[in-house]
Image (cartoon, rainbow, N blue to C red):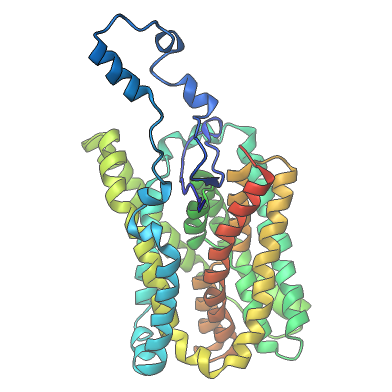
Length: 414
């Protein structure tokens, strides 16, 4: 049978998590114990004797009681979710073709800048993040912060994102690029920039916990404004011995724009519409309409990225390959090490997946903005930072499916 995966993005309190594990279409599904308790039909009513009915009614009831053919979860997905892999690779291919066969594409897309990033990319990022952040239950976050579990998750995430991952990228940069200081500096910038955008997409596709992911993104954003510049100086100037200077303003503005704008808009939208309409209307109508825009923003961003840099990537293929090698090792190693540690600590699938994607993802828009502002748009540092998302997108998309396969083999549950 063809494997079918539950792509469930469930938000709620830690005690209400669903198990999000890869299943197969021939398996029957049973509701979790906590949902069974919440079923409005109590056990007494379910076990009540059947009254005497006419023969025809009894036959009808018997037909209704027979097990119905289970509908594939794959068929229940929208066209964007169902063929997401195809759309992503199609967007990458179209971008590369445009960048190489329509020479004016790259310069046109890079003409307008917003916080150091091209305007089309900025628009794509904002559209991508807004619908996801609209799903977060801000009205109940205070209850989440009362639990010890959230503080354990935050501490675990800070250690991974600001100690282990950056130093691992530094080691890979020196191991793979000892003779290319400029490419090495760009790679270090990618390792220092913790993701605040696409990680929400990957976590959702893998069935991770969106609410915890939003919290970790917020924590990383605040730390990024404080730590990015001094860590950049420490890693590049002190450890590597290269003269370079960073400005706090670049990192702060990038975080404020690409997280602050969609986060503020999402909070305002959620509280306003739930008050003016109803919580039910917001959940069943508005979120259903807004949801696809997140993947549309993702596809648009990928297309623009590859179209903007496609020509440069093809014409500097040797440098791209040299930068791509440590990036592939970085994404894969950090992801699976984090997942293994989280599994051993008993975090459960959803939290383990969330922590793994948060640690392995990077804030490419910040890395590109800093590289361009510090070294110039045509520098090798800018090239290395640009290669980051070109490698990250296909690798992390593959990890979405890989983590489901591993979770299924390990029979992980929450």
